[in-house]
Picture 1 (tube, rainbow, N blue to C red):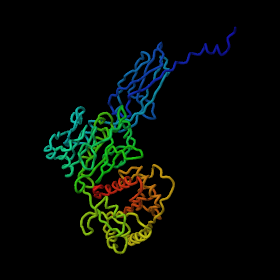
Picture 2: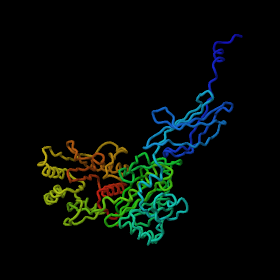
Picture 3: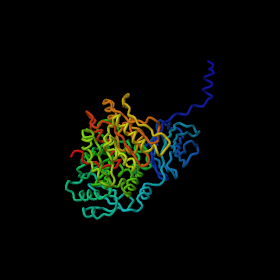
Picture 4: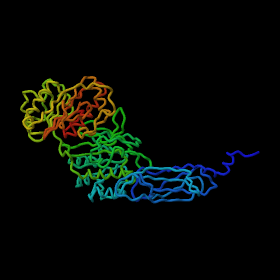
Length: 535
């Protein structure tokens, strides 16, 4: 029987190379330049009767020239452990890694590509450069293994007694804790005394809230989080870090291991949290201590203590904590506000649960608070003085008649100094469609530490109550909306800053916690002293 043309063609052509499967495992998403990384290259479905090679190389994005190539002969399917040398670079950069299985003729049976972020230096270099030889105090509580004293490459002084804590003359103390202090611990009491005097304290470890503070519960909730959200991206602790950096640390990918309990009083900022509705789940909280807020305590549920030698981002964060600990506190002192309110003002009564108003006759730094009363003739001198001498004025829940008086005061102050028309500020309704998750505008420093979920809840409540937002009738570089639809805004010109808060201060239902947290963050960022909320 004669053969068909198709059969003859099949006899002439060589057989197609058999396919294989290739996986790259244990390659971290971030590595140090010049370091060695052990990865597993898993090969399956590879034909056993062929001479196969496993090839790999690093590649710059957009280029084809291989860097530091390697190869080995395969003995069949299996997992091959390989030590990779990371190329040296001078700046943080993304780099490709490629691996392939080839036969003796060069046919590619399997191929895989990965993108890795490469960082210059090493953990020790980054931490030492940030610390600059300064001695840091360290207190260990319940640490049985992986002690920071054995791993941090900086001068450390163990503070094992209350006397040692009180006589320590440095600016930063690290508390590495796997359990809380005992309630009557003399060391804990001495640490709180130092915080009152302006020493900074950073709490790390499995128990990131170990101090027996009245403002903090001692119980942190254990979690396994591979992604964390920045709430204060401009804080110096997060210098040189982006929003996507707090995710997938090391081989395990775990970034945070504990949710830090929020204070129930005083000045505090949520620096980072786990996204989602319901109650807040902060993983880093900064609290302010002392009669003037000169001390700082940061409770950190991020896995910095264990991961700083394993992931470059964790090392940068550790370096930032050390650098922040050496800086002077800003603002160095919190101030008490001065109030200008109508006698029947419900705003004043609500604010008194958050702040204590000082005397109007007092001298020195202060921030003025008020409703429309400060714009009335009885307080016109105070308003004129504020616009003349500068400073911060926080205005709450204004009405249309209040805006007319404010516009007149602004025209009186600046119309003589410029030919340009002074922009007119107006109130508009805050009604609209559903509030999206992005109700928080590009984050302004005054809203550092504010949760987008809290903002969405407040905006929804404002819509239901027909609250009116502040808007500039003409474009101006002096006015800026800080919260969607202008429910929180600011007008800043020369040395004068006016902050508008048009959100309801006594919302119904579950909004109580949201407005307190949001208002506390705003006041803390303004440098206003917040007294205990539950006194």
